[in-house]
Length: 500
Image (tube, rainbow, N blue to C red; front, side, top):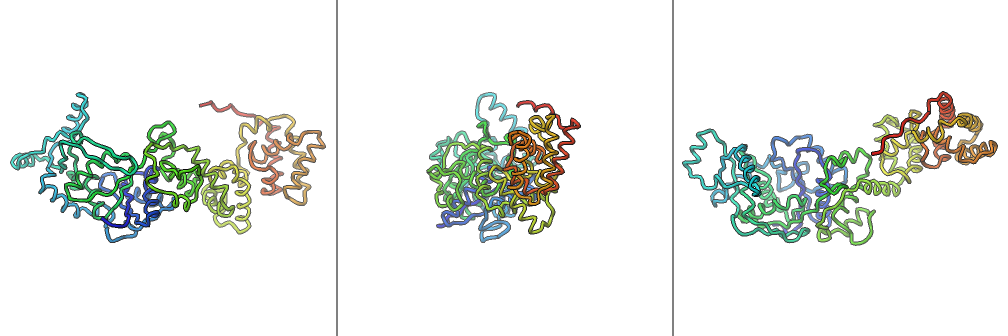
């Protein structure tokens, strides 16, 4: 085993990259960087049926999005490659021969149907289902006859039948398993591909992995891995199993909790820095009350020993709050640069905006970022900045735009704004408040209808500052349009949405 820390993130390219994967990768990366060690990316594609190149691309995208790099892997190489398990098939044979020669591995001819039937019988008897060892001691003659019947064989590992296996885990503590309850696992499938249990033990040894940091769901597998390592004369790495991530209803995080794929959160407008910060606090604490922390601060405080063994809750609202805090801290120009691709995708910004147009966008995000939580908020809530094609919200219709007296006020305001020579928030505010005073109204009774007409909403950033960012003629046109639609009865409120 290497004297230097070496960890690996070893995803299977069989589906989307989910938050649990990213959480595991993040903790491996943090530990490697904290200890001055190496981060290895290894692709475990021994599920040859479900593995796809598209899923592999998603893995790369997810890791790069959140800002993780690796020292060795399929794309960067390294002295312990190949780093894709399907390219290592010849390597496993030597270790398989060693197990067979020592009597710790054997051929199994049981069919999937037979195995399932036996499992059902065990369940009916209240016995935890496991392999019953039917093929453990077949003679060569019995094997020959089974082959003649056209049956294919897999290879199983012969686990210990008595005693216990103790897993000493950095996070979960000492966990003891009864060997009699394990059952002999398949280590090589009928296709010739190694299973996860076998390949991971061999690869961790050959790649000199010093610490295996993975999700707690793999803790029961560790008893098998420890027995395989002992049978092969391999010194086991240190194990650290990260706590389970639960949904807000405290059940295992799944699709029913909303977005769980990393790409979903990216598309919703989460910042990678904020997601990095949020995820690291699921199962780890700096030991104080800090929540919003820079990557450098996290690195300085991080240790595996400070990780919690209890499950953590993925609170989407908390994640959105943290994302909002990060946006508040960001420079307006940087934030505008992050937002621009989303706006272009929605057709709200041109492909090659001018320097003046970019400067305008910086003004928009600087005005809105105090209340926004996601990048997508700028697209949905702030749509009126970018186009006249926006909806009038039901609340805006009900409170202001459907009132009989409002159209006249909007038209009078449009006339006042038409006269302004300087289109800036001070003169806009003076015109709005001046009209209210002349009409003998409180300023709110002109300000609120104006906001509803110009933005389609009843809430948002400073009305006068946002109007300054809009074209003067556009604002005047929007006031006239809302007045006309209101008079025509086209801005009556619709039915309220049903409460959930």
